[in-house]
Image (tube, rainbow, N blue to C red; front, side):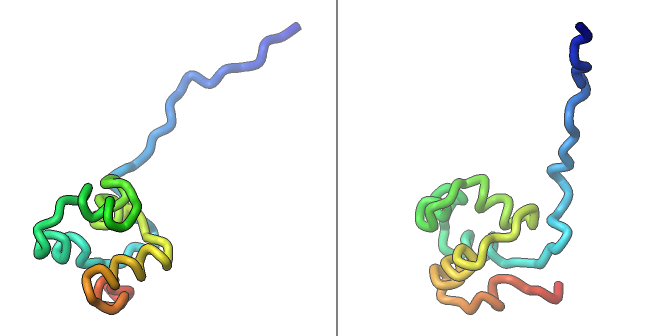
Length: 86
């Protein structure tokens, strides 16, 4: 009986690459203006610090409910926080 071939190569993930549908956002600027850490903002929104970091760096586009929650938290319109045309 032959044994199945085992792939010994690892997957390469390009963490530095922005989301293909990247849009500029001002989450980091708004967060810093309020004196919040990424962890503190994540706690308020119910997400991890890593999620906040990924949004700020453009590696992750938030869901619509999360984008709305971010905008409401900062008393801004979604379009003021996320710039589709950037």
